Image (cartoon, rainbow, N blue to C red; front, side):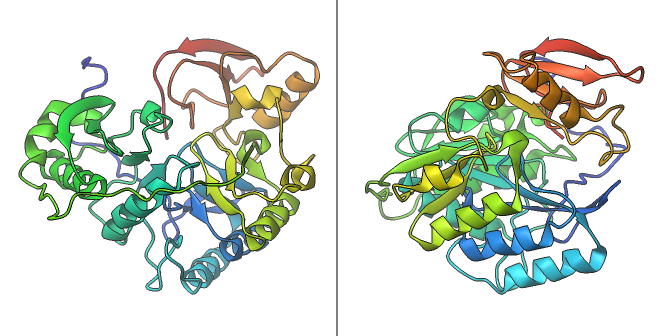
Length: 365
């Protein structure tokens, strides 16, 4: 691991981990921003309708960690939304009946029912904990390698090995128990670090064995066919109220909704006409928007030098954006939301122009 990625865990940070959640919000230029972390991407029709009803000032947003964001909230409106979500219930709620959310993102392969149970077990064990950094990313991969490619802090592969910060280990076992042991091991050695890469995967692996207790029974993944699957792309992760309404209706009709770290929505057991009903509300086929993302930009972010999303929309309309290499447009050097992997970061500058830098790594805020 390079010195650039690893950080001395004994160093003192000059600011706390300020990742927003359901109750801790970020005060943006357009009001309070609340973030809701689904369990493996799961959301019900009732939860989606509540989020959409609260999003009166801006569209719902999907993040690069498969979370939902609601912008432009008043403090009272944000409290009311969280309280309403806590009353929903269900096996994998955004908030449980005590109002507790998941402190960090738990993502999972969106097309496979086999990951649902381990993701729920992990999330349920972490709910309400204040010692888990919001920047930590956990992933449950069904063996397809889709979320394994995120290089999450902790990734468990069904039938495979534990990965730490993208590095495979020799540890195998029950996926939920192994993931939770890795979290506890990280917390034991983290100092004030937020990510596994900051202290080193090898150091965390050494500590895992002291926390892992193998269940008495061999883990048996849930099997079964997910049925017809449709994946749709809201442009720049923005879900309009009309799109949310149709998605919720489809969920009422039997579709299982899963949001993804790629800012898409997967519908398992999708009705045959789902694509037609979502047409023009989201991208349902090949689209130049599939390789584009952006920070929120001005005027919703006071740090942004320009209206990033408006500029990007005009560039797409003119045929100047949307290619094979992912491009992430940002309004300042913080480059918020830059995805993992090779990416062209198109950065707005104070003089109104843009400059492009190709990165192999990531910046995630």
